[in-house]
Image (cartoon, rainbow, N blue to C red; front, side):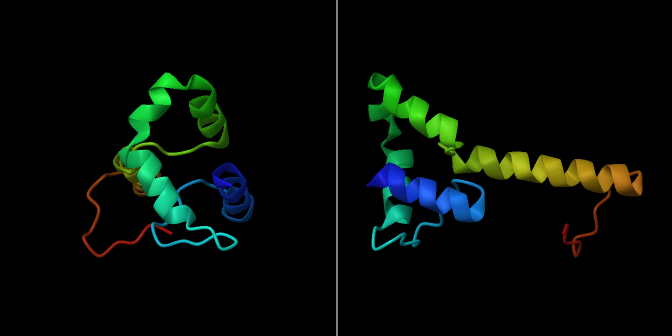
Length: 93
């Protein structure tokens, strides 16, 4: 159920960063994703399950993913503007 719901979500949104309150086909996918992230250590003993999630692009550490997004946005801004002095009001679109 979990993998099917995650694949369905990814097919529609193009990523596996499921919001915590998201429900996919009646399944509380967001809560399940949060549980896997917080208790993901059980996957260390089951490399097959972890491999399935990794191939889907599952984000195990949301903080790391947000950091990667920030760096990517900063690089885009810097390349376009020629500096990294981003105004506080700037929104990268």
